[in-house]
Image (tube, rainbow, N blue to C red; front, side):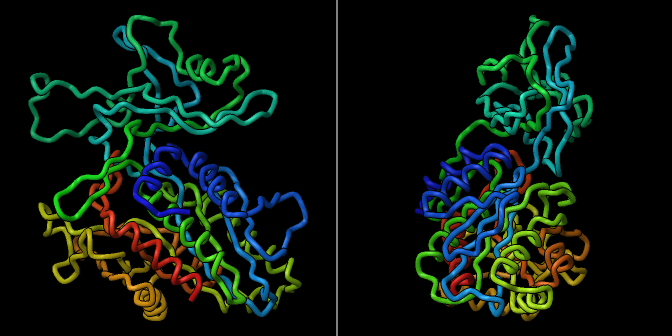
Amino acid sequence: MSNSTEDFLDFIAASPSSYHAAAEGARILEAAGFKRQAESERWSSTPGGHYLIRGGALMAWFVPEGASPDSGFHIIGSHTDSPGLVLKPQPDFSAAGWQQVAVEVYGGALLHTWFDRELTVAGQLVTKDGDRHLVNTGPLLRLPSLAIHLYRQDEFKPDRQQHMQPVLSVGDPETSILEVIAKQLGIDAGDIAAFNLITADAARGAVFGAGERFIAAGRMDNLSSVFASLRALTQAAGEYEGRDILVMAAFDHEEVGSNSRFGAAGPILDDVLGRTAGALGADAEDKQRMYARSSCVSADAAHSVHPNYASKHDPGHHPIIGQGPVTKINANQRYASNAVTISLWEAACERAGVPFQRFVGNNDVPCGSTIGPITATRLGIDTVDVGVPMLSMHSVREMVGERDQLWLAQALEAYLVG
């Protein structure tokens, strides 16, 4: 698997929803020789690569020849979902002659950035016969801004219910978004049983900048980490000589708290680790010993210092785009990093020849959180939080450094094999 910027942009373009990200990741894994594990079948501990998809989550693991109940797990955690506008169960409505789509805001979307963008509708749709379809309409919806002449206020604060409903068509009350989607899929709209559909920026990512090269694209929180994790695991699988099991866990629903069957607060990672341990002959005591030998790198986007808002950052910690992955630290346990795991991660960076930085929040500006504390709490596994430095986080179009993206994959690979 290549880690070129064009491949990264291809991955983002192919992943407008968490379901697509999981499917595209599975395609990459299969090309690298990984085999799909059905959860309803007996678990395989055959040496080699394995993966499973549960909803919009993707789990992958590599079992080396020497794996046994005396092994541990090297885990990289990330998430496949991003903020957006989720279609409501009854999505069609009209206002002032316009046909619109009823949506619910998903996660902490930076709302003003969603205006004046062509939006695709993507996700999964299930028909009454039980078949599951992946949906990606291409440019279909738009949230038009109100003209400045009609809005004489200094700050734009859209009402989430009234102002965040995209337009689909005008002057044709028979137009239905479900009819449009059904036609694209070649099915009858009456056969649609249910769906999980979200909007995403339809434009492809781009590279720009003078000197330092930047990447601008949607959903890099957190497809930047998912892609780097895929690259690290597929590369490590071809060179690893240790006995520990290498794991990639790309969860869904991180942006809304991770509390789902597909999220980090759910059972999916424990299921994969526990069933793999059991297939290797481990009993309950062996499993806990394996967990005690394990570690996890929670890889999620980090904040770069913003030149126009430097006062929002801690004055002694100014991670910046182009200077390497960021170790994220918080005394109130919003991040899981501690002295032991920080040392583990930064030693991996040094082995890979990758520079690294540290982030601590301004005391007056609360930071976000990640899957790191959830994984550490649920499983008792040593965890560190890291990520590429980013500007415009949760915008419809975010910004990272091209070198940082490459360095993250290299450091993650060094962590897996080291």
